[in-house]
Image 1 (tube, one colour):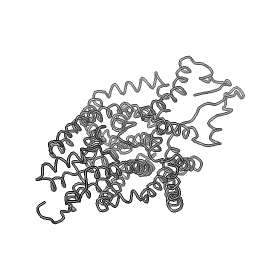
Image 2 (image 1 turned 135 degrees about the vertical axis):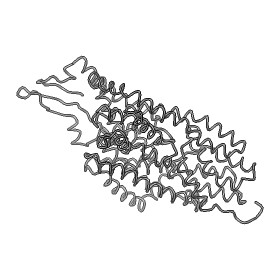
Image 3 (image 1 turned 135 degrees about the horizontal axis):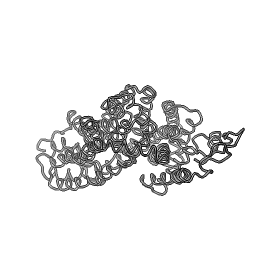
Image 4 (image 1 turned 45 degrees about the vertical axis):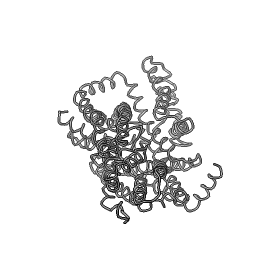
Length: 261
Length: 301
């Protein structure tokens, strides 16, 4: 990896971070540039192998396809997963399946960076309070830009340093783990497979207003488990069920819920 | 407010506010205030217009909007629209106190955070990603990622802008609607859709199987006689993944586990079930754990 390649990847990492505004805010950054599917393409373009990049991106993406970040809680950090995990997996010559465990490791490490940022940024909020007392609107607007310093250091500078100076270390570690610690590799693979359960469980906590709503979740689960339908088909059935529910059951259900409360 | 004509928020101002929000909604994010700094920035065009020559009014307005604000930024923007309408009415002399504006914001941002997270990263994004993966799986073509990026941005930007102007246009009525329960019916029905899709995603992605199996020696060769996973598959495929998900859900909902705690529990369960056994088996080479060739044995990993 040359200096320019590492710098480009670090730039993507910064632009795709959850708190970076420049590419249509969260919509274009976090939800597009930091999806492993897209990151695979971008990494492939930078490193000169689009096909491998996209294939690794797809493998990593499936682990975090249902990932949401409720209330700013990032269960697994997509920025480092995408722009440290995927490039390192590519230069180490890992297969897409093995890349997943590798990328998940970076994703877990990355949550520490996120915690640091979201706690550290509170200092800007305190400054904002002071400006509000003074009636200083321009000051508060300026904070929206100044707060980028932390994001840039963590996602841009740090990513560049790790990518550029850590590449040989990463390749060696992968080689060492593969040959000497296969149990760790296997464990990371199993963990990677089970990790989506966390994302789904968070989603469930958010959507279920009452325990009985859980039946709809188990219905969706069972449809796929028994009939192996794809996600689009599940969404079509879900939409039909939701319309039927709205027309015939929702009023009764809410009355019942109000009575119980 | 010398002249008594009603000073409306103009369409260019509305558009400018929405763009500011789209770009900066999380740029000064902190656990303590989340999106409040971005909220003030978004309000800047109309705050300047209404309180530019009124320092006291500006101070009050800034303090009013610096309070905690957090929602799913792309769809929760409906709350920003409603707050804009209220701010306009207040600046034009309506009797609306600070608490009322913040109560409306808080009343909408909470439900919209839940609905938005369920609808956007929970439903729309997995479906679009699923299609993108389908296009590029196997051949590694760049079309899949490009399809995802373009389709997502078009859908989300149109939806977000529409929700913002919807919130602004209906202002107080939106709140009345929220109270009347019709809105609640709609969101509950939408969460039915979200739940079905969440179940489908979980079922297709949570990969947890048990390797426990009994091997028997047949004609000098170790062959699979009974696999626990195969028996489970006959009853309910992906059963273990469903149990794991419901276990984590129960922990988070009933016992208030944080995500890190849930991650820790997952690590612990898999660690005991897998890592420990594998390590012992690998290093100690215990026959029970590592199935030696050509023998009858039980494999547990």
